[in-house]
Length: 175
Ligand code: FE
Image: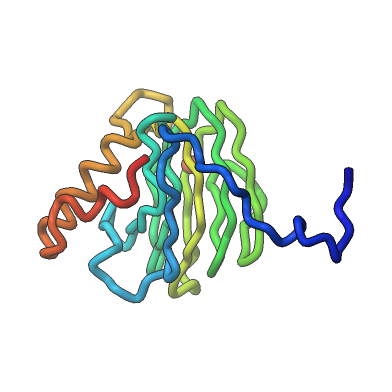
């Protein structure tokens, strides 16, 4: 039954406790951080800023940042990816479209692609949800390596230790 606008119940918070096993929310007020320490280097000119590293469901949410002309190595996705471009633009060598600031992209399972940021873009930032695993491959599909939520967590631990935040700093992003 829809509530009337003047119904006091409409602005009454939920009165019951959340499930006792529910996890804590993650709130990051300044996600596109100016604190360079939070950006984890991934390749030349490429870094990521973790937002939610979901080890219980095997996915990760992050901001991918590429400065100058950068390339994210060719990789295959067995599971879907969602992306939203916050700044700059990029394209895949394997597709003829370009993702620009404000663009949403769905990458279906089975995609193999190479992300390129053009020379005239100083900085590209895209919000990505990556599910499962990224399998790095050569141009003919030979497996060269992989990343999953656990390798991302390890990268964060190593980097945050190096920059003095401590390896536990990443725990706030893990669920
Ligand atoms: Fe990808």
